Length: 303
Ligand code: ADP
Image 1: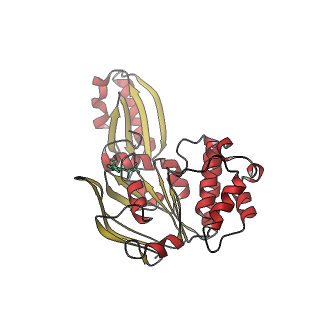
Image 2: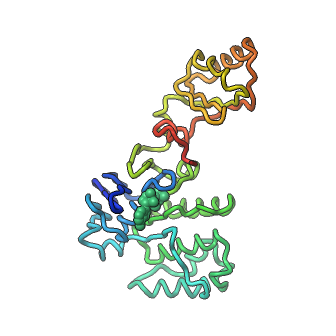
Image 3: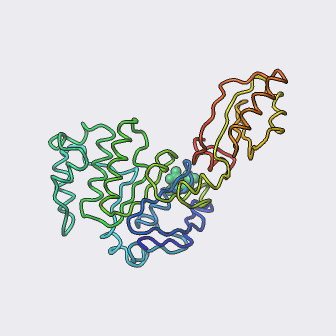
């Protein structure tokens, strides 16, 4: 095991930010921490990388204990945090050389700049880079000493879709090189695409842990049917529909989870038309990790 976490706890005064979190990560895995803001993802990562002291529990990275062998741990990890601040007046090349000089050995700088798609920017000052370029530079700096384990805390938050895709490619490349990656995110699509396994966190608790496919499968409902009812009082027909496992509602928008899309959908349309109920914006889709989160917590990831 590359990462072994057992019963990790962090309190801020009396507030439990992380409550007995346990998981293991194998070499070469991309492991996701998925949860809404405040779930405890950053605090978990900060404890693992030695920036915060756990109040209880243990963690070992590549066999080294994060409490007792901090220096050994630092040799085997690379960290990109949301708060990573860069020297704005240096150029990309200069800041990479500076970071490289901090370590006894480092990877060759030019190929790393190339890999991070920053070759055109090597002589540009950091302050002139776009958000996506800065994130890629932060990742380059995190891996310049060729660590075994890379921590990425919400690496794509605030980036435009294209910059996110570029970062996804880079994370895939790191995986292909055999790195073990711990990635926190509140984007369920990102977690689904990138992660081999995902720990879903909420309010300091780890509430589910599995592959993205198994998490969605655990819903026992492959499809979701969504529609809006103009008159909410007309919703009683929903209870009589066939094949429906769960129903959620927000602002008169109903989401029905079903294991038999075709018959439920037919049932919705027939019952609504015979009762003269107006249904708007009807959509069907495959269930997602977002639905898993709603199923587990009753809330949306986006709240
Ligand atoms: P996430 O990364 O999932 O958004 P965090 O680990 O940043 O979550 O935060 C978990 C909880 O701990 C939040 O409720 C946050 O307000 C709280 N918290 C984080 N850092 C501190 C701190 N230094 N002092 C007090 N509370 C904190």
